[in-house]
Length: 472
Image (cartoon, rainbow, N blue to C red):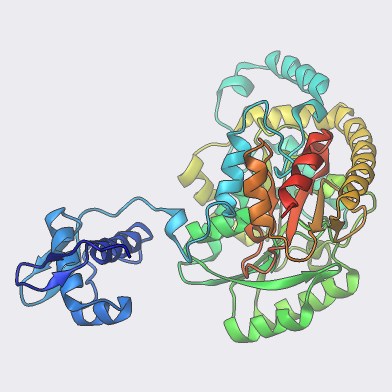
């Protein structure tokens, strides 16, 4: 039996250093997550001892040590208070602590920091070799011959007018009536959501997401201190009955979703579900952010909430990071007219001017016809990769949730009893980055699932590593 070293609190009472450190770590975590801000009163010694299930002596010792290091301050006769300036925001410490192996931020970091030798079937973008390299180089040469303003000056707050006009015409092809004055360019789809969250919600507001959903929605909403509630997603859209229950119970301010090609499942919203969803949103005064970033991967047009709604309570966002270049950061927001002024102010406050050079590049590629040709070839290439990857996965006992969806992703179920997070940990030791299901699931109900990017699954070693990682 292992002995635990004990010390006294100065009055002869024995105190466990391990328990003291645990109490101290809990206080530091609350400060890092901003549950305790500067000047906030800490729980009383008695109350905290009860909640932590430790002795009052342990809490006294922990508080004294934290006071000695300057983390908290004692006010005689009043209690202990958080001290110092506001701690830097720690996203990893907000909400329930997730295992870092399945944390969405961990998945992103592993993919972004991966070496050239690392295989990345869990990442969310195309290989560089699949991007329109020749078209990008031509566009760069064209923009390089432009005037000095295009190369060196800030963009206008709303963004390059010719590109906004072109985007309005493209959206009309999906049945969405958006005038150029209703469209604002952003640096990316992620920045578009960030701006909308700044504009629409306050800390503590409830936001609905799909379960599963794109994992960075979770990270962004955590950063905005929102209360996140999830609704199960089906092959035709969110479960409408449970969606209605969530509206009644939580009265959310916002719902963020993909409606064309859903990430990670590949599902497509049905017209019936779309109409029922909008009816519920109208009854509950719910705003919907429709992330349409995968629009150009579609084989056939899917229903758009923004088209049915007319950009009344639905805001649509998009980006060209997935189809053109992740280095050319250019996205957009299409919103009600009376929102644009406030969104523009926020954009100026957070990024000042827009990235004009990126907008000029995107405009050049869209206008010269190379983007259309690139997407025609890309859709065909992805369709072949979808069949090949699905066949290889089925051969090792992994089953796609939807067979051969459009886009990049296959959402796949592992055999019963196998935990995707553990498979991902094992695969990482062999330089294969996977995306385990619970990174996408707020309810942590997707432990049997992995998301595979079929464009990143050409190397046969991936399937050997995954099969070995699933072995007992």
